[in-house]
Length: 225
Image 1 (tube, rainbow, N blue to C red):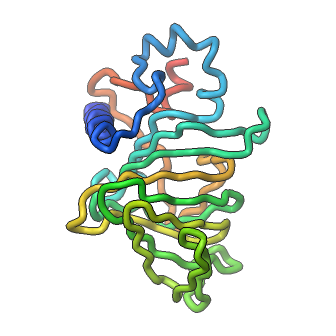
Image 2: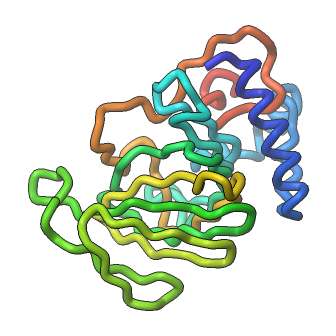
């Protein structure tokens, strides 16, 4: 991805979150120079990969297959006692986050406003592929729900779903309903080691630095700090 595209995605995200009255912490707006100034006190933010996270999953087309995320809080099982994480995401209409599951993380996915979020669901089989025959039983807003393998659940604003480990899921915004502000509340998040994608894809983007970053991504911390 070009840095100019990432910068524009961040600007667009800030505008959309402002419309939805979702306020980010002050450090979300720091410049690279601000990060350098404060680097002695941001160990938790950096080590736990909190902050801006934009990926096209190696597709080369962010709006077809990609995701905007901001990790607000996160623990680290090797470093601290915090057992939970929280993210905010923006999902465009028909913008796919590809099929994946987590080995360890349980998560609630919440439609915080905007359009509708569509999830397609399977169980993982013993080979960690799609189980085409087993139904999927989970809870939607605490209500026990069972769907066939590959079935869809559509979350309207205010609705949520609990995804346990080994539940394959992909999601995207429903066409014609607008972009979606999506929350995630979960156990500790480890995007480097706890994502099993059905296809071999890149989780973090390769960036062409065609302009200076407006804000640092979590994948920038090692380079800049």
